[in-house]
Length: 216
Image (cartoon, rainbow, N blue to C red; front, side):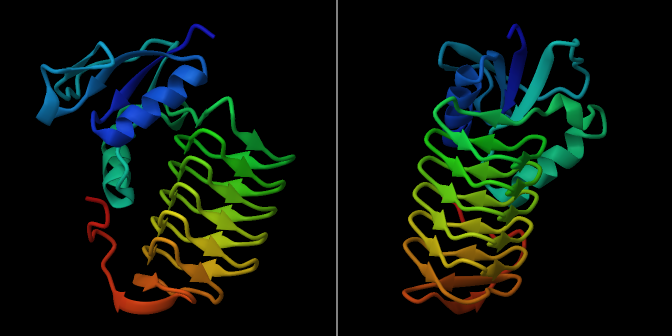
């Protein structure tokens, strides 16, 4: 593959996206991040954002921002100029994608991830290192699955929701939109929209707004 890619963002998550992009055969050209413009990352320049740049046929974009709500806002801005086809999914070569699984535009799948057969991972999701979703799961747009998360089959994760490090989700459970499951939680029952759920077993501990920060 001779394709090139530009990564939007230059923080820790962008470093992981760089790793996946290289594994997937892309040449990373630059990072875009106003706060870090003028620096370098992996010997690549970090430049300021510009709405005036264009992409040739073989150059693509990736979002290197881990916060789900923020990632959606960035996509909304760039999609005004560039089509979805300019945001390929990126899958690390060590990951396993099951038969008839579907992966959406802009989704990034980190090393040693397992996606079960007939699962549907929608657009601009993040599946982090050593996570596993079983058969026929649905991971909705802009959702994120943290390192070491495991789900049973037929699990549904809502739009912009986040399952934190090491959590386990029982088969058939649905997690609503804009919710966060805390680290190392055991989710045995459905989780509603816009809540933080935590514990063994996981219970709702408070409500949240879709733009509340959950990454620090």
